[in-house]
Amino acid sequence: MKLFEYEGKELYQKYRIPTPKGAVISDLSMVDRLAIDHPVVIKAQVLQGGRGKAGGIKKAHNQAATLHLVKEMMNQPLKDEIVTKLLIEEQIPIQQELYLGITIDDVKGTPVIIACAQGGMDIEELAKTSPEKVKRFEVNPLKGLRRHECIAFMKQVGLKGKLLTQASDICQSFFQLFRDYDGVVAEINPLVITKDQRLLALDSKFVIDDSALFRQKDFDPEHHQETKENSYEKVARQNGFTFVDMEGNVGVISAGAGFTMTVLDLIEYFGGKPANFSDMMGGSNSDTFEKLASLVIRKAEEDQKVKSIVLNITLSATSLEYVINGLINAFENRKRNLPIVGYIRATDASLIGMSLEEAKQVMSEKGVQIFDNIQAAIKEAVEYTKDEVIE
Image 1 (cartoon, rainbow, N blue to C red):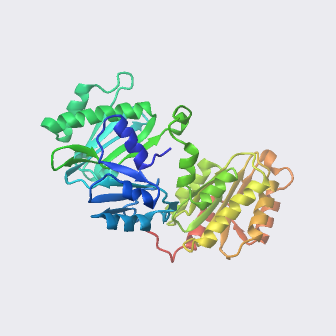
Image 2: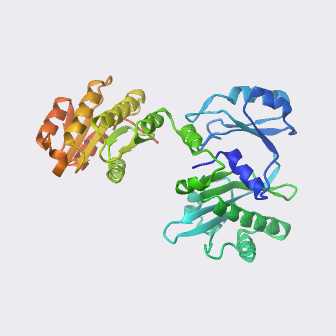
Image 3: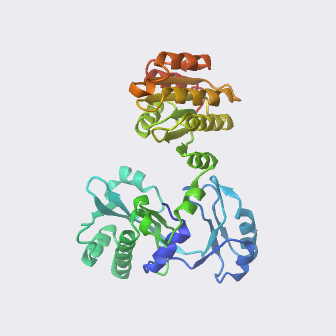
């Protein structure tokens, strides 16, 4: 579960990690009660990344400008989220931006602290182009992070004197916070050195392990889930299946997370871009399949970038008859004549009530091109997108 920036900073303050002076507001009247000197930074509280480029971070030099921007930003959509809270902080004169993050090395099973003397950028890209600038320290989970290890690590980043002491304190506190709140990813980017030689956490990213939410009572998972979902994803969750909206040109009707991921990879391999990921639990009935297919079709009809749909049905237990009946209902309600290409495979108990040949025949009669293998189907679906260029 990803926390809002202001929630992450509340945790930072609890663990004595310095942050800019600020306040969270949820309506215009609260602006008059702010005890923060101008100039200020106004930051939309959304869970999506890239909010700065989307206009979610603005600066104001006086009270009138702050009021104007709050009116402009509050209760408006930003990257598929409605902004209901704004974080208003003092502007900080910055000398240097650093990066400090913690994640889990899934192979070694250890927490890894990552730091860099250049913050504010894509750390993954920097690790590729200038790996020597990105410092890593693997923490022994049985011993924890010790003081002398923090000092040695921050020296590698290039800090000296009082800044080294401050950075070491922040590093140790940050790690303790990460452990106490079951973090899987935590970032302070940027961690800034101010012109008066202080270290401040200017931003926060903190993701709690979903498997550990039962013991993290400070936050409401349902609220965070609902906030980050767009309308398609919300409909899917309410109907018991998974739909992840993506910026692509090929819609995907598919069940089974592993096979669906392979379908997405093949779409990319043949030069297309998937418009969504979808999945549902085994044993789902025709109603669920109809809702999943209808949602993919709805997204394709509303998003003009989508030029075709891939149908991938691979069954071994779920009734093929149920699936086909659900798809028929969904396809009959199409409003836009998008090409649908498909691959159907079913074995064992799933064939009771309908044979594979019957299923292919029914789908063909509904205008679905059925191929003998999934690669050929996906290649054909991508062909319909050739005139589209998606960055």
